[in-house]
Structure formats: structure tokens, C-alpha cells
Length: 436
Image (spheres, rainbow, N blue to C red):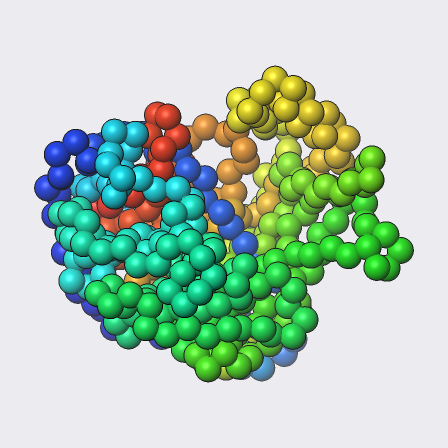
């Protein structure tokens, strides 16, 4: 099976007009979260001629291994950003900020996207609701609120669209809600796949199944709590819209962490420069463990259909990166005492000698896969993404502002979460220019 390009869609229209005192540009500072990768051994493959499309000077070779397409991309040129891909320096629309009214106060935004008619929806774990705004930012509706009953949420997360309804997953309740932008919650169902543990929603596979996975749990039943360097596995499964398990994709490692049992308590802290598993969900489910620049993709039926490999070595962990990480720990700490404790925990950990191969995965609305370069904590500069076409060829490089968290990439826009100078979350819509 091949990854076929999606039909080109008209992007939602949005206006640059701004509600007075509610909409204003500012420098965002949110970090993008990430998940997943895997490596496979293939034999008996037939090599085909290199593809001619994609970035200049980036060779692309394809071969087949028992029905799995292997795409191998050569070294990507550093000047690829000159191909014409760019994100606007200033947002066309901003909602939120310290001076905004209650309708524009956001906390722990877990999803934001433009609807085909230009309306903007925002899902927030902090407010535990789904908000709908007009194309100019005027508030239209609020659905949900804190609670456990029908139409209420504990920690809602926007996974995508099914028909004309939003698909919202609530991890504490293990519940999927279909939310119509006008009518609110129209249907709910529970998901309880066996052996998954703490269920985390990842997205919709081909719009037909909810992907769950990525959570880690610990138990003291088998000889006490673990300690030291850990990377526990997590099971990924999909669930259909009747709440039944559809596909069990398998167990994959989570992120590297340092676990300690001290004074009767247990703590697990992410390892500085540690490996992470990053995930993107669209027409396919793609995952990378970041041990190498390799991404594996499965279809909605659970078949492995593509392995994408890029010739890019992992960066070494050097003194400047460690110093920058320590400085960031102190800056982000709530107090001097907390900062000193964080530094002591870091001194107790065995630091890796190499950074992860990549930092995040995402699909845009056209079916292209976006892969973010790994950027360690404390390193200044923008986030840089390589865009791969649905056939696996690299077609562009894009830089996004430091701290800007994309939640939807359309044909000519990006919706995301930023923060103002005081750390207050806000929703931004920026123009996207795609290269040739």
C-alpha cells in the first residue's frame, strides 16, 4: 500500500480584523510536546531509481520489502529554508492575553483549529470546555464545563474532526465525546482497551478510529517501585466509534526517565537530552522512537506501509548544551530552592552522549508529514521542520517561532498556541507560504 496524496482542499478563510483590546500580537513561548519511532530489518529488497522531486541535492531512493515501502533520503541541505517556505512573523489573528476578557482567557489549551467555514474552535484542559469563535474572533458558543456527567469534561483534548463534529477525548474519564460546534455534545462512548493502562488520546487514524497510547504506569506489586534509568513501554491501539478495539499496533517505548525511591516516595523525571517517542496521526499512524531519524507508518487496518529514513546523525551532547539546560532549569523554577533541587537531580542522572534524532511529528491538512528537528531545553532559536510529501519525498523546510505550538497546519495557515510576556496562553493564526 502507498501513502496517496489527499485531494487538495480549499483552506478556511480567516480575517485579520481584530476585536478591540482582545487581539494583539506578542512574542509566544510555548513548547511543543512530542511522542514516537521504530527500526526494522528488511531483506530481499529491490532498489529503484532515485526520485527526482523534493529538496535540491537531497537524494530519494525507494525500495519494496514484502509490501512495505522503504524511503531513504540523503543528507538534507541546510539552505533548504530558501525554497520559499515561511511562516509570517506576525499573526493575522490573536485571541487572548493578560488584558483579554473572560471569553479569551485560555489555560492548558489542548487543541485549536479552523473549521471549513472559518470559525475557530479552542479546547482547553484548564477551563474544561470547548469554545467556538467567529472568523473575526467574536465568541459564539461554549460547550461543556467541569464535571463527569454527559456534556462535561475533566481534561478534554481535541483529536480531530469526524463529519461536522469535533472528536474530544477525556483521559481521566476514558471517554470520547462528539461535539457539534452549534449543538454541543451529541454523543459519548467509553474506551477501555485491555492492557493499555493510562489511556492517552493521540488522534484519528483516517478519520475512522481513535488512536490511544503513550502513557506509562508503575506498580509496586512486583518487588517494589523501579529506580534508575527507565524507558517503560506503552501499548498503542485504535478504537472504533462503537468503543470497540479495532487494531493493536503493538508496544513501543515511551521516554527516557530517571526514577528514584526516596523517603518512602517515588518520583520519575524526564532525562535531559533523553530519547522520546513521537507520534503523528492522519491518514496513517506514524511513530518514531528518536533513536535514529526513522519514522514508521501504519494504515488504519494495522499494516506497516512505509519506513522513512533520513541520513542525519544525532547531535552530540556537549558542554554548552548542558550549561544551557541547567540555566533553563533555574529560570523555570518556582523558587531558588526548587532550582537547586532540580540541578541536584540533574547531577544525579547519567546524561546521554547523543541527543534524540528528531523532536516531533505532525501531519498537515494536505497529508504531508512535518518532522521537527530536536532542540534541547535552553537552546535559543526557532523550531525547524522538514516537510515530507505523502510519497515520502522532502519538499521543504519551515521555521516556527520559539515557543509557538502548532495545533493545525492548513494549506496557507497555521493555528497554534503562544504566550505573551507574562506567560499567558493565547491562540494565534499565522499565514503560511509554501515553496515550489
